[in-house]
Image 1 (tube, protein in one colour):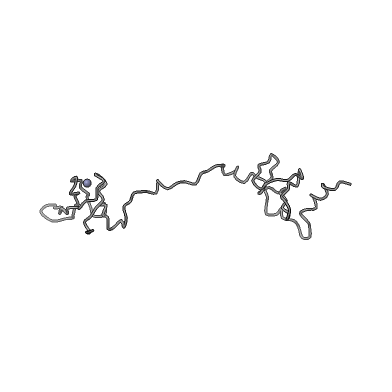
Image 2: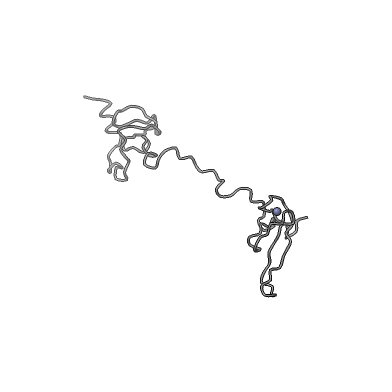
Amino acid sequence: MATDLEIRCTACGRVSLARVEPVYQDFKKTGEMFACTSCGHRYPSRAETPFVAAAGRPQVFTEADKPKAAQVFAADERRHCCGWCRHFIVNPFNQRCGLSNREVEATDVCDRFSALEEDDKPADGADPLDALFKKKRPE
Ligand SMILES: [Zn+2]
């Protein structure tokens, strides 16, 4: 049966009961200490005592144990692939590089990468495939 004095002692690691010890200063009770009945470790205040009920569940993991997302690419390198390049052309059939006219994958990394800017979007009426088809059909 869980009582409100049940602790998971951080000193001995056992689930144990805390013994309440009044703290006196000049014969006046000034607070409470909690001691582990298994190992005798003392916690100086209620807030610092690892009560099981208060925690809800044992704090086995801390924030530091959370897995960090693997940083495969450096920040400035991350978008250095064709999918973020201004030369990247998507049509219903495949994806091409507007410079080489070769089929590329969005994840390809290219020496001629040039970051796509907001104002690179085609002007009104301009077909983004124009450049591609001019290269495709040289006259
Ligand atoms: Zn203990």
